[in-house]
Length: 461
Image (cartoon, rainbow, N blue to C red; front, side, top):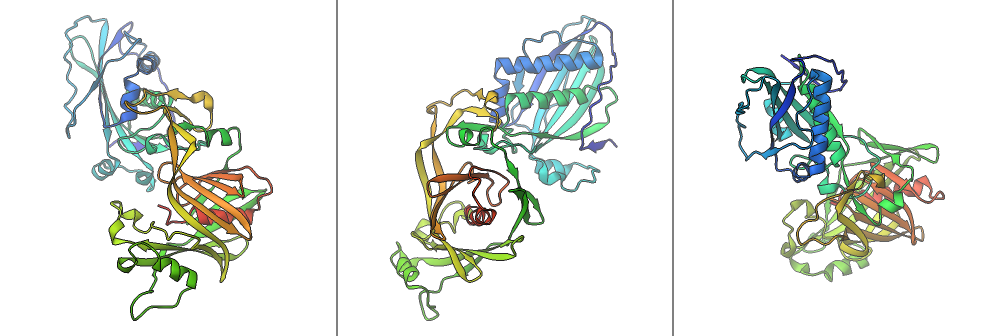
């Protein structure tokens, strides 16, 4: 049985099948529901680059050049649980030519790992892999005799990247290999290099690729040429270096506490919360809940509690059940507590449009180098730029200092943090910070940790 190889090490051995033969690419079949891949393969310049990479691999391995390096013809295969086997259907009997067939078929990683036997010691592999492409290659001589045939599974996971911003099409996942053309071409080159290697014993490999980001006018200019700080996550402890010191914070699981403000079991609450609840729309039919999440600043040995107030209104039940607890009570009824002391109060607004900030849906890049920008075909009836809609805007005060946290990006994955009107930090991540850029050297680590606790709390779905 061939083994799955996770760590890649390429050795290009030169082996010759037939001297002085050229290779005709008869067919390149592609199946997926993948808009980025189909966009890339419909681009003449990208197809030519793919052909040049294939030619390079064929010369290195077989000493046989590709007959046509100007283009490749791509056949989009209709959905079928069983893709038909490759069958030679060429009519050219010229013995100086070999005939190549390639399949590039996307598979759901859930079903792939369920139906595939693999003997990798890395038990975390299935959790990392976002999508799988099966590459099949078959090489025939003029008499339609099979010269070489291989199948290789390219298991795509996400590489660590300094990129920041709004992920192109939500990032890499099954049916959306949202990457730049250069990254896509390199993925194919890796596949060609292994699948066309005689005697190859690799059945599957993990390929880490960087996702693409949309260009914009508010995140990209701010973080350009700025150093990124990276956050590690080990057993729920988030650690990073800041001001030459190690910082560590930890969050607990979210919990829900019913607010008993009606009926015989009603409890006493602060007058301002009680008044706000009773003034809310559809008060009599609604339920009210405190959302609670504990945090800890490990270095300073301090415990914190995020406490948010939310309404569950039966007239406004969202279709997405994950948003059930995001109907936050209007006003400053959300808190950060240290032990029993309230150290920050804030409001939470949802779906706030910012017309000064724009994302450009036809421009993608690697999230850190503007020289990598690639122009996509603009969707029909789509303007050249889109106003940013913030999932949440948090406005509050901590120790008399006003702060604002603006949450944008796909599924609330970018946090712009302001003190007063000064942008002091941009962080990437949804429920935990993954990387960030700090713009104010006077910002203290303790205050930054507190702002992270507010902006990355688990209830901001």
